[in-house]
Length: 456
Image (cartoon, rainbow, N blue to C red; front, top):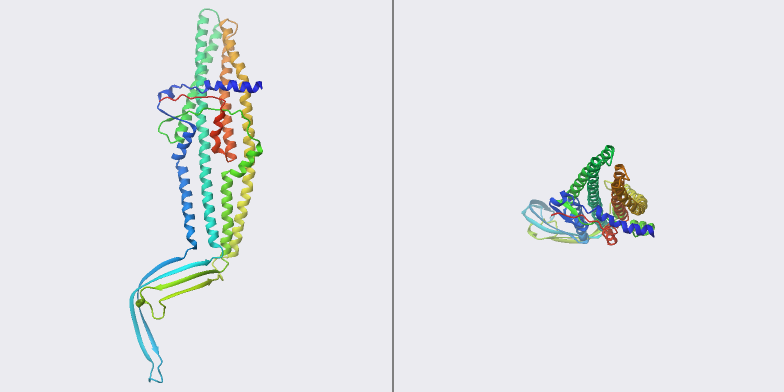
């Protein structure tokens, strides 16, 4: 319980880590966004996500179009015609020779034709089911794209918080080392310390200055990446802090079960498998007879040839005897596509189980690492305080003070990094298990109250 208490108590230290007051943040115009707001903006402004949605909507329209496959096909035919017909009647022995004449006609022939499928060998049902499976696949692609964008946002959004925390720590370390260097200079002038001690303080100050400059550059780069990702006009100031949820995750088996049921990649493969199964039915239907009803009606009977009726209706059967394609081979190809989809599904399931297991272990390691760092932080903080007091009483060297300060700074940075690693491991686990949409739910038990002040 002592370790857990330390974990809870020293989680508050991240308040200092991420309490960034970097001049560039307070002076430049920024847009303060929570993670949920940033996620919503990303989906609204991402061209890739919009393209995926358009593709899904297009497949839905095509699936809706197949609903009328059971209905008759009706077409109106209009044609200007001109023809002549020679005919002969054998009237002998009434007349000495046959009677013959030529019949000439021209006009506008208009007719309506209708064909109604009665039985298509299962092709219509299979075509509609295949179209719906393509809609399911496109929706799974939309979900997958959303998850990919959200996962990228988690990386960049909390990356800004991490670098902001590091920049703040480096700023505090620089200020402390600068005060120490100034104090060392006074002590040297008073003859209390040697020139070597003062030089050690100057070296530490130079190193702290370099670390601070690098931290500010890293923060600027992280903000630029986040701003570009969100397609935002101004720099983005995250308001959702770094966090570590100390509640132990659910058992590994539950995560694996969730991943096998909800993973968007498996949903895509399931839809492809369904399409392959329906393609088998479609190919088989080409080998079966088809029954249909048909009718034709002539509107302009004066333009109808004498040998053709004014209207006709009936029922027909069409049986394919030979085609340009080897239908048996096409059926075999469809079976192979179905087998391919099944094999890909099996491989994907194995990969998902591995990804979940790996992410689960990384999440547990991140929690453990933070707990250990929280316990060590108290020692580093107390050591820095004691070394500073001892130096003022000439009981410690300048090197002792700077080393203690470096150790404290490293402890701050490691704690922020551990929180960031926890967030990334949690995101990986949620994504592998198909539950990334629940990522904000873990904000409810935040044990690190970090905050990034946002300037206007």
